[in-house]
Length: 161
Image (tube, rainbow, N blue to C red; front, side, top):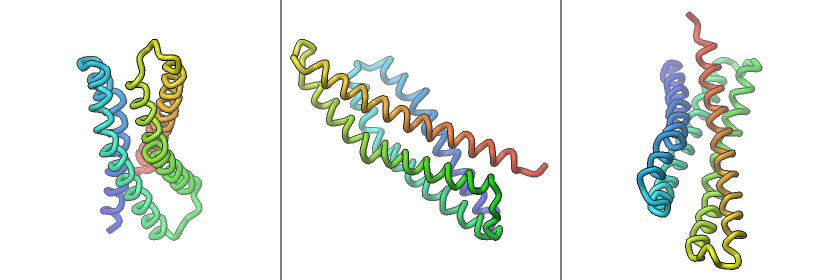
């Protein structure tokens, strides 16, 4: 049972981190390189609901499996355990923010931006709004990625040779 929980925990964190890395450093740059900007944006917009669903599933499995593991270990107040719980909660909260709050706002701003010409009076304002939402999304996903990598490092550090 403990081995299964450890496996689920490690697998969920690895998939979560891997999906962020793949989208941010491989898929999105390639899409924007080979497709017209609007088409690439459409493809990425279509990927996002699945991407965030994967984040929520991986985050829930990671948090649940870690809590059960921690319970089985008698809730030792090890700083590493407390840090991992805190990091998982922050990661899930940021993923939920990016997927459920920021993503719809970004999509709305992008749709509005596409309806305007660059010569439209409020094009710059809408473009800035879209840019702001996009930066928030990148920041949230970057923090989730870094925290996930930190958790993987902690896991590797704690493996007894």
